[in-house]
Every structure is written in structure tokens, then in C-alpha cells.
Length: 186
Image 1: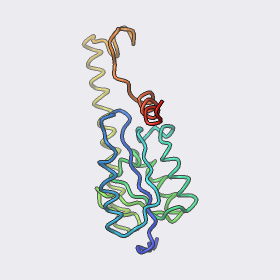
Image 2: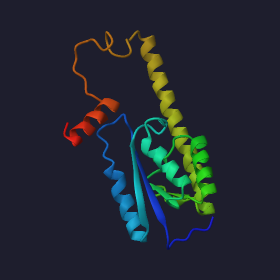
Image 3: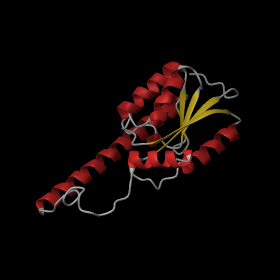
Image 4: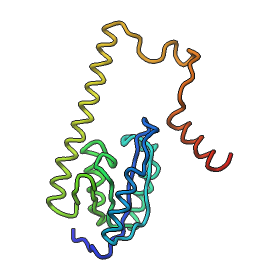
């Protein structure tokens, strides 16, 4: 794919995990904005989600990005890291193959690769395989820990369900909705 570096219309994609409400998306956005500005490219839109990479239902901005890619709104998607886009090689390749067919390339700022080049595509494949490997290792460690805890007779989950009387931090969907209501002044 030939890229016209002088007329780049860029979409920025950022995502924080829904599991850690303390993550600040500006950690990703500030360097991305600076990169786009330093290249003299046109930033068309920022797509920001707070959801797991695998939670396609919760990734509303991701769905908007896909729709806008199909309608030709931009020619490049930039993200800080590969794992902000996808966690499996299969999902990543499906996305990047579709984008390639649409004339959209992908740039990862942290891993320093660009899918508009052959070297960038090779590097992306290696990084995607490592990201998937890391996720599988984490999953295996969690399962090993749960198996050990069960073997030791430990109770897993909340004691007595959610009715133990302890105050818990609101997270996920309810916290995001409460934050939106506060911004609206409700």
C-alpha cells in the first residue's frame, strides 16, 4: 500500500481496561496527539474506550472506529501500543486485513511499527504473537492459583455472596454511568 504522508487523515485509538478505574487515558492520548502534530497530519477523531480488549460489546468507540474506517474517514489508525487494539493474533489480523482492504494502515507508537511497510507488518506479527502469549501465561497462572486455593480448601469469591455487609467500591458499568450523570449535572 502506498501512503501519501502529506495528506494523512489520522484516527487515534486509546483504551483503558475496565478492571482498573485508576488508569488515565491521557497517558496514551498525550503522546499520540504530539506524534500526529509533529508529523503535520490531520487528526480526524479520537476513539476512546474503557473496556477489555475482548469486550466488543463494551467497546462502543471501537465500533465507531470500524464504521468510520469503512466510510473512508481516515487513512491511518494510531495507537500507543498493540494491546490497545486487540489481544489475539486472530482478532488483530482480521482487523488489519479489513483495514488493508480499505486502504487504512496501522501505526503503533510504542512498538514503533507501521503496517504500510513490509518491515512494519513483520514486526506487528511478532508483537501480536507475544501479546497473545502473555495473555495465555496470565490466564494459566490465574488458573494454577485458583486450583491451589481450592486444594487448600479456601473459599473463593465473596464470603456469603454479596450479602456480607461490607462496603465495596463501585466499578465497571455502574461507575461509568454515575460519572456520566455527574458530568450532566444530575
